[in-house]
Image (cartoon, rainbow, N blue to C red; front, side):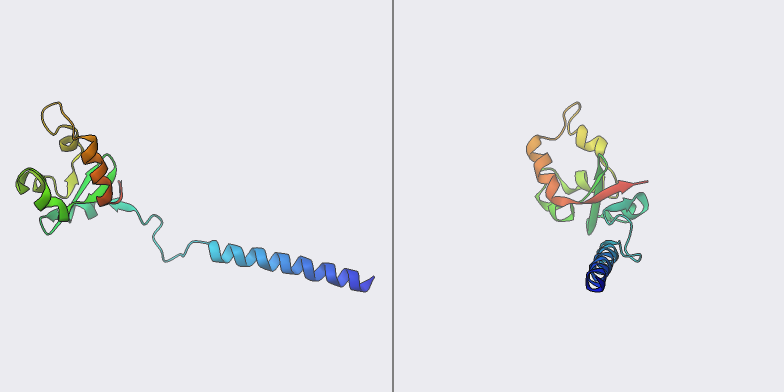
Length: 117
C-alpha cells in the first residue's frame, strides 16, 4: 500500500511541477513591451522624412521609405504624408477615388505595426 501511495504522490508532484514550469515558460517577459506592434502617434511623427517615412493608414502603420522612389507620382506626394495619418490621402487618391486593390495588396508588405493613442 505504501508503494501505491508513494507512486501516486510522485505522479501528482510531477504533474504540479510540469504545470508550474509551463506557466513560467509561457508567461510574458516583464521587460518586453505589452504590444510589440503598438506604435504611438509620437513615434510615428519622428519618421517624417525621405530617410525614414512611416505612414498610418486606417490604424496600421507602414514604413514606406523604400517605396518612395518607386511610387508612380513624385516623391513630394508621398513625403507630404510621412509621419502622419495618411488615411485621407489613401482614400482620396484623386477626388472621390481611393487607391486600387493592387496598391492595397502592395501596401501590406510595408506594414510594421498598429497605431495606438
